[in-house]
Amino acid sequence: MIRTAITDAAIDAAALLAEVTTDATGATTLFLGTVRDVNEGRAVTGIEYSAYTAMAAEELQRIAEEASLGFDGLRIAVEHRVGMLALRDISVAIAIAHARRAPALETSRFIIEALKQRVPIWKREQYVDGDRRWVDPTTPHVGTATP
Amino acid sequence: MNQLQVLLFASYADAFGASSVTVGVPESATVADVIGALRRLPGGDVLPDAPLVAVDRRYTRDLVAVHPGQEIAVIPPVAGG
Image (cartoon, each protein chain N blue to C red):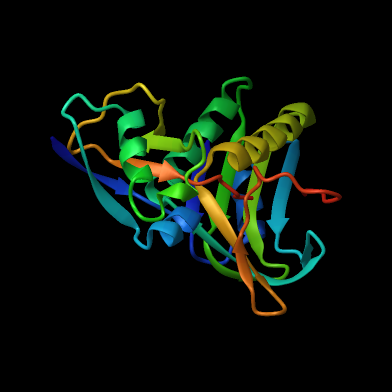
């Protein structure tokens, strides 16, 4: 089972967990990306996510299908939100269930890393001082970490 | 010459001042020709040496031929998650 979506609605993480869990799944992972208050030392008040929606939906689905190739019985639900998000809002949720923990854990990591590399989604951070800026992960930063 | 519409997003849309532009390229044009034509437009200096390009919603490469009717998009560095 695979379901992926780009959505402008708030993500319901509990609903994703319920969607992937069955009597046969003994291990479920839930990865959430949320908006945090500081990036590169600047106070962030929110993030505007935008997407090339048609391609983002297709690329996200391709990633989930690639992820499922290695393991039988994976259940995958992924949603990425677009629009204006506030601190703590969920930008991405990845729920994976399998009979065993290793496939669930590995698949979750694979999907978030591939998503960040390939899915055409962009974010523009809004700062306390009113400034806003497109985030460019290809620009090297000093002394910063990514989630 | 073919007139090709190119979709732009995020920082590239800001730089070009539009969410799509039309470029004129030879009938035998490749992705690289499209990028070259974009560089000559106002805002074109925003493009890096090798920008990501998608044709019909799949990433593609410089030497791939492009044709009218295809959905061509230049993709800024992605930042999802």
